[in-house]
Image 1: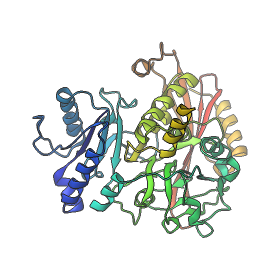
Image 2: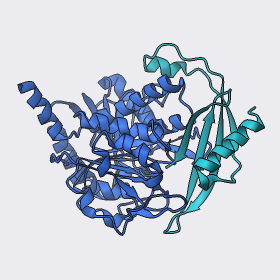
Image 3: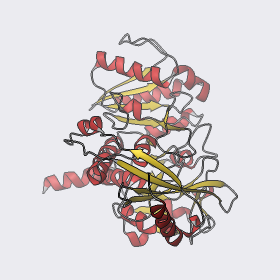
Image 4: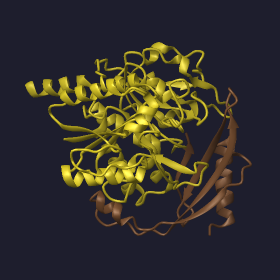
Length: 356
Length: 92
């Protein structure tokens, strides 16, 4: 697999200061990926492929990637190093009539043609959190098998959430908010897990995620509830993956990724949609497929890409077209974390089966 | 355009099943569904279905959470040309 690790040197320096340790960590990461062809490039510096350096602009960076492909060959996986101020998200037209002026998306980086809905390569991002150690930490994560999961849903979406959670755990173990509130939330619920599932309300301005029962919206989980959390995160909350001008201090996604054993985060950059009851659709279906593939032992990157492809196929078979919500779902879901990461025990399971 | 009788039927259903949206007049959007041939091709799915129009009835309100954050709540009911519900979605 050809993996391109891409960043912008100027932006990165502005965000994290000294980049030496990060560059060393990247070289070490590349050395450990002997089974892949991995290169690390800055789009704003000269490179050995003689692809012309470019400015910090999403379209120009995409062009840079396309030109690199003509010289290096097809890129199977793109790993973006840095947040929006280093490698900007695309600001795409919002297919839905809601309050998001644009949809923040990495989809065009994953697509070779101008149909951005369907990805052709894996694309993931390591946000910078203004801290080199934060990015380095994402490159060093390793899994410890637990075969356990955690899930929490608003009370009103319980049935819909159960349909997703059954991919990774027993539905009777799934928490519901209310009655669960941040004050009664136990940090240990998030510890020693392989999967963490959140189907809660989210806000652009708050780090908290909310439950719902009727017209009541209690805080289901806040930053203070995150202590030694572990697992692959699938989050359906509106703005769950919104990180513009955010840090670990005010974004749940970054707070979670800052944990040593949070392996990756799949979530939405903008207002997300989902069904009120099964069958799964929109955000529910996206996260369901993502978990399904991770659980089968695929890497996070493969799981995320396959989830988008399967999502589109399922919807087209079901209703014949991708409507506004479906299109927005495909654009708004992003993956933060190392795309080559996979849950180790899944590999052991596979080996075990082979031995039999 | 969708008729008033259908809109009222949907409003009654929403009031009953989603009381928090009771009394809200939906914004009605008409969408002409164009064949999505490029997507079908990219996914190797054969011939795209020929579709007409869909109608989206959007019920929207702002709510305040317990820590006084304002969040958008959007309920969308999608109907086909015959007025049959295709799906109901809610903002997360």
